[in-house]
Length: 444
Figure (cartoon, rainbow, N blue to C red):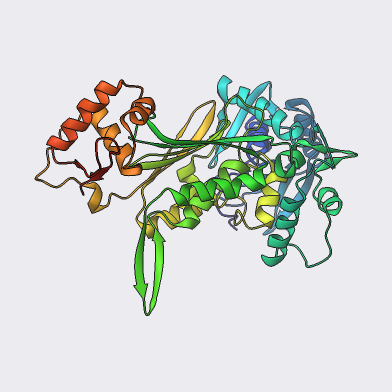
């Protein structure tokens, strides 16, 4: 008989002679998934070989777990008989990560156990403390400091999506049902989701180039997570390119990046953020890309590309926030964000990448280049940085004055005038207004 392959939650040992290795496997599986099964009497390839099972051998396993694994766990240890052969089956679970075996910490990767680095161990403790405490901690906001319109919008969308039953809902019912209040006060999850205290900051900007140097527009939104989802989506959709296509007798407007992609990236950035960190949410729109930044180090030990092509359990940093976003269909299902974004981008031909460090996670969507963005071969394309910034501003606001441009790019009016003259001579712009009321026509 063969039990199949070892997995990230299933481990085989030939005999109890591999007791130390078994304890390491248990700790590594607990640290990765919180639950697992181990068999003594099974070869690594899954073949059932069996082993001698007695009360003494069962006690040996129980004693090894008790003496080796910290924090303490209480596994189910029993004899199993498969195909006439006797085995020892150990089923274990725990949610007090990180777990150690013999004073060392391990992590499961595929069917192997590897010792974690000091930096990974530090992240374990920080992540666990945040996950266990932050959402449930009582905030200074009372239950009366709730955005009633946001809560009403939530349950209407959730009912419409079929994710909560139709019924008569009120703010107190929602807060109690989803654990968003502690007595007369909202907890952190409740305040950040629905509070009217403007608990979350989102910075949004449009830049003249792909560097964060010259901005054409900048907004600072302060609101709750529920409202910021809509504000973030609207800001991006209003500031990207759309094209018109006619289907039958109807004209349809199509964005350069699918709305579903934008919505999924934004929702996941709020669902997985660290809300007591040192940075804020950011959206940056550049000529060649859109970046969505989420505060807090990437939470999972699996890389994003592993989620895109594999089936792994999601690491949920903010369980209450994620649940609300799921119920109103802001996110489709737990753990599917990267896979869904990958599929949508592939279908639309949109490239993407990501950057991650100890402060936050940035998702990058590359904007497709339109023909109108590509200079004609008759134009002199050797523009310096100042000229590129001035041209980008004029594309956004053709009636910008020299003073306005100078202020935006932190240059003198004289420098701006030289750039305008150069752009005119190179055929990029032509003045169509008077000297007193200048307006520039940007040539395509």
